Length: 290
Ligand code: PXG
Image (cartoon, rainbow, N blue to C red; front, side, top):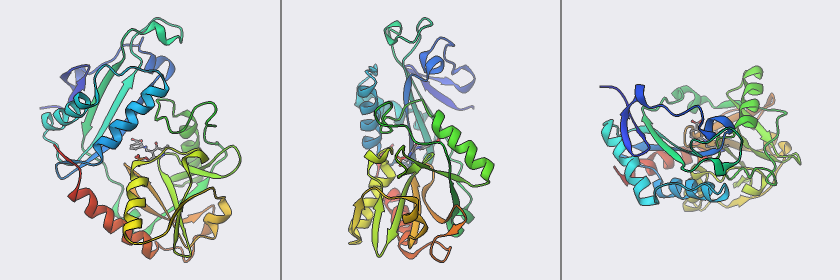
């Protein structure tokens, strides 16, 4: 039995899950998405992901055809239909089918689909050894044109940054904002630790407000670690005691070097590894049961 995809109200086989070439999600990148994970039969922070999806829709004046409860039910139904308890879930809402021309009024109804599939984890080795990252020249969007808090189908600047990272042979690329402050990586938020204080850029620095980022801040506060959301530069990363990235796909992954400079000893730090342990416990013990 093949993978079942939820597409506009029904579960269909992967082979028949198709959208029109006139969908403005494809023609103009006019749409939004969420990447969610389920662990051991529980969807991690489902409410937060759904809230962020509807907030993104609000900003784009995109009317999702169902309410939040129905969306949550559809996500769980997709997991059940595929007998998945550990999964990666992709929810996509597009502006829908319309004539050529970018005016969204040409699209009478938004479309949405849900893909739930097995997760492909990064190799364990990466979590033990840590990543080397590099700063790339592609800057994060300026909030005045497309606010990075909107998780839209327009990921081209992140993709350009990823290409630069690939060319430099690193697993993740660090993106600065237009003023040169550290914003985030192409699909992850960044944290540094200096003198026992955990620091991550405020979303106004040009970053997505990450759900894993929020969870990590809560875990740090439980450990009585001081947390600050503030602007910082590459200098602060070079001279940090520890550094790590967070994201639904990557979870928490240590960073051991930036642009050829080792961060501290060049090994994952103690606070980072402690937070990784806490996070692994958290995802297994919380979340909405499927
Ligand atoms: N910044 C950006 C630009 C992202 O796209 C994050 C930070 C981390 O946010 P969360 O809420 O996940 O902690 C993201 C998340 C994928 C994929 O398939 C991308 C993300 C999440 C899951 C899967 O590329 N991006």
